[in-house]
Length: 211
Image 1 (cartoon, one colour):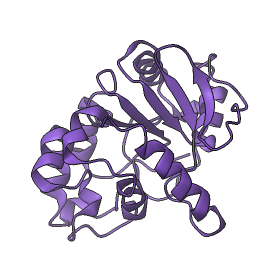
Image 2 (cartoon, helix red, strand yellow; image 1 turned 90 degrees about the horizontal axis):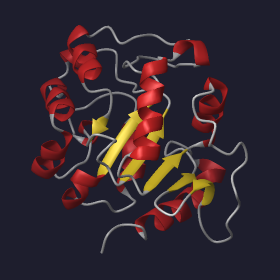
Image 3 (cartoon, one colour; image 1 turned 90 degrees about the vertical axis):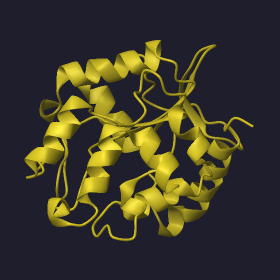
Image 4 (cartoon, helix red, strand yellow; image 1 turned 180 degrees about the horizontal axis):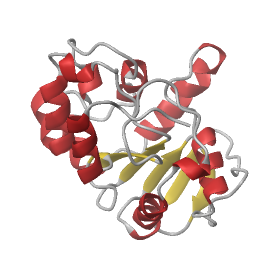
């Protein structure tokens, strides 16, 4: 179950380009989430035009503002900024913008809390994600456990392991071939007792960045 975002303009932008950053087919790094959640009043905030600019061209946005997402701009008010502040600590630079894609399993933006089930998902959208992972340019794909669980339930990703391979001193692995690796990682919004592990995982991801 989910609540579609009330902004028709935001939803229109998202339907035309159901990802954030570079196209997942062209990305080197893909980060997969459940749904793209925005403040309900985002369209009335001064940051809204920047949000639309970001959805139109995430690469230019990052390189022009020096932040990878509009939720990091000082005039954004709402949920999601903690996730992106945590992501920023990995150490991606504006020069990496053409390499990074954020993709959600749900094909439209939402507001409030979602509890997604396979019936909520668009099969064609899931198939495009599957194709981007297996046939696209991505070398490194990152999936939190709750996302991997829903991917399993969908039946669209039979290659995805139900239990990740535990790698001591590194990220655990859900799938690997000679060209790419799919990692299991903590959601960037976790905190408290998970914080130490999240910091370690960010360091592991940082080490994958092109030198």
